[in-house]
Image (cartoon, rainbow, N blue to C red; front, side, top):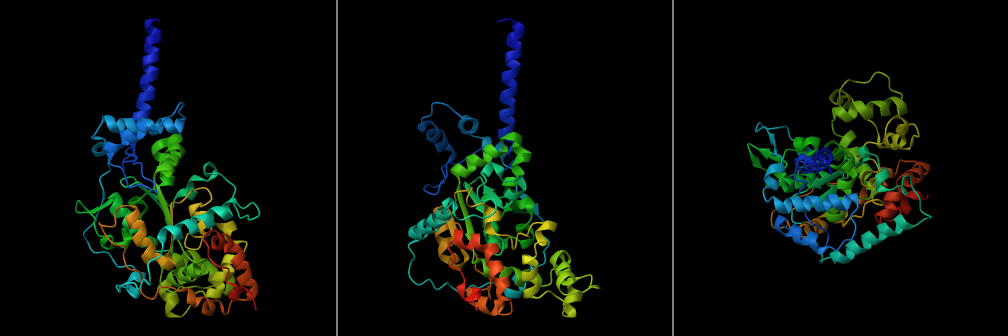
Length: 418
């Protein structure tokens, strides 16, 4: 081999090595240390990763397996990689911020939950996951985008999958299903946020203003910026190894909760973007106040009936997709494309949270924060839907039917018949 050929070969090998090295060091939240963390195992310490990687027998490696092995090998060779790749937590000002109106109005329920009897959590989880798999595999049951693969999901639709690389956790958040508190827990676990250089240890100390800030979380839709063409590979590695969970809620009760939160409390953003169009379309108002405060002072706000009419209007989603607060769970979390290890429900959040924190091995660090007082309850459905025409209720059920069936919620027959 001539010197020029050797030189070209060395340049090519060096380029490949540098690309892979950039991928490792580019991840400024510690993605390089991929913990072998599954629903059946606690997070492995970095020292254990090489052993786990060596124990697997493989003959050929795909791109994703090669990248996986490379990251684990790099970690084994460099014990300081965690210090080199870890992004400093986002700092927040010590100046007090305004308490969110919803938290301020309702407050927290600090009473001890009355848990009557200990649920067999493993059995509960097995039943929930079985129900989900059963309907995903049922060819006679269809809903939009059910059959597409994970690779076919647009990047912007992966923005609800929050990743914590420190503990090997992926959480798909669903608005109006305790997501504020679960996001707080993810911030504490990932140490992505600090005050005066000290990361938060108590979830409730994190101001709500920062809880919902995109900069506080690493989500799947950000991966392409870090990994380019390797982004889907990295997602698949994490989906394979990390513990994945979500929390769901009775779909109709979630809609009531969303309406109460976004239309019955003064919220200028939702007033401008949603209340104003709803009032113009379904109440025939023309001259509307500029702010929610002004509108509320004269009693001008959408009714629940008008909100339902807005959801059922075929033109609504031609303008833009449903807002995340009333978008279907199957569109937020892709449960037929992602195999979740834990499915929690708001109706049993106290029991489920205890089980999940124990599963993640962090139950000694903190407890799940308390729920709001006056939380929207299932028993309210009949009163809220009493003035909704029967035909609308039936259409609404069809719109959210997939969420009812996938997550084991009974069909609300009392609302769908005369």
